[in-house]
Image (tube, rainbow, N blue to C red; front, side, top):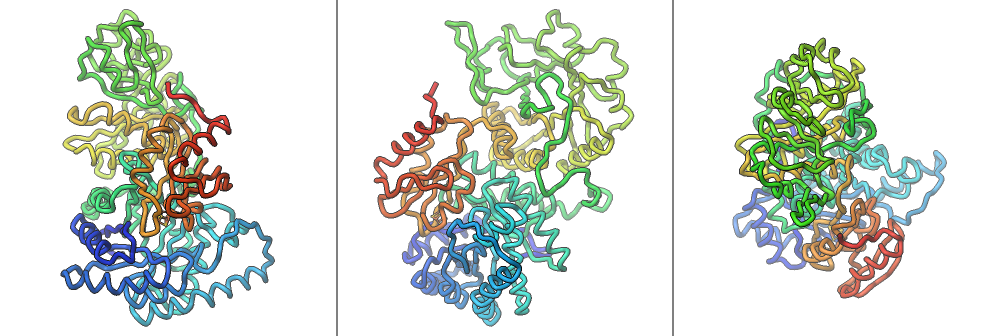
Length: 618
Ligand code: SF4
């Protein structure tokens, strides 16, 4: 791992670690699906010791996959596991500290004393790893920072970095360098900022440890894939990341193919030569890559300014005699009422090219045509032209409210941009292999030249599967939105993929980058040997009754040990506390303890109702 090795794929078992054969068989399924490292939870000594049986059985069956012990709270389990497996993962937030959610004022001396205490607790493990040639991941989680770090730095990327650095410095002091570092969060912005800051901090201190990338509690299905790709993909686009783990609330053998699809995209990027590589020095960036600020733009109609990013789709290939197809992009037509019902994920603009519909469009859906077709329209209400940047100045007739201007990030003249007026919204395209970086360079040029026109980012994908489309678009567009760049998204995909998926992927990317919330967010843990209920089934059940609660974040966590910390900024939490028992949270506050599983969902809904956050399904 690291250096010029390929990006390694890994995942984690969900079986009980004491179930040797079950864990071995799941590990084998994971290896067959592409996993190169397998992590197994070791919550106490007995599980740590059972790793020897699991490893023996795997080797006996001919599987040499490196095993990683996952440790929280239990140094003695870590020390036992480090003698057995190839790597141990420790969480610096809970290895030497118990979380009490206390804000403590530390003097310099008191803080130093704390560091010495950690040194004493952590150094035996480091020495064992050194002796046995065992690697270690120092895995910080946004949701489980120690009270010491929280008091000093708060719940911030800086705090996450410092949490890891305290442990790395101890390792280096003991001449142990067999490390990999992670900075996970379920908030993609925090996660991206923390990894970038970690790299900057390491570079300053002369360190260059490999990075393990992951978004925690990403959820399942389409949402989980998009959220993972936004976080992991953004960093891979930055050239950061040596091993990745996608955490989905699904069986672990479904995780590796998703991770592999993301990593494989970069196996060819090494072939780019110097002239093909974007060459912006990070010191010269006109925005801060360590915090989120949206690029300031002047609004044009409902695009840019303080408006949330818009979604644009190409419907030119549809049957434009039939208003029902608009249901695929969020506008359900009722022939009885001759009206459209607008869904939460209703797109904002549609591109029709030269095709003319034979029915009236919903009043809030903007239609975009080629320039000549637009020019010939008798009624231009809600209709706008799309024209090339170099053609704009020469056109005598222009739309007086909104002109969409197509510009390729790799071939444009800055002087043409200065000729645009306050009706222009750029549609930014790219044909580069490393398209995100090229589009980012374009934004940097806009910022440096103080051009405040809104930008709809367009990416075109051909010859691609639906699964890869989700991951690639989430990476390419998500990386820009995560940095506050972009006022709209336009994904052009092969017709075979279908408009509903392209529409939901567009909204999913905006949701995952937290730039436009259009649905309920589920922060569900991937489950592991500690899980106290069937996570997949429970997540589906909770989703089936709450997925209309736009903007609410619900954490669904398998255990009380790590769950409350890891559900981070969820508004409500549903956490396993024992067999058949659930504890409900409002933010970080326990509201109902040990509720019977059978009534827990009803009680959660009651709680949401009490807070005035419930709406009935329309
Ligand atoms: S929160 Fe979920 S994945 Fe994390 S330790 Fe608990 S059960 Fe395992």
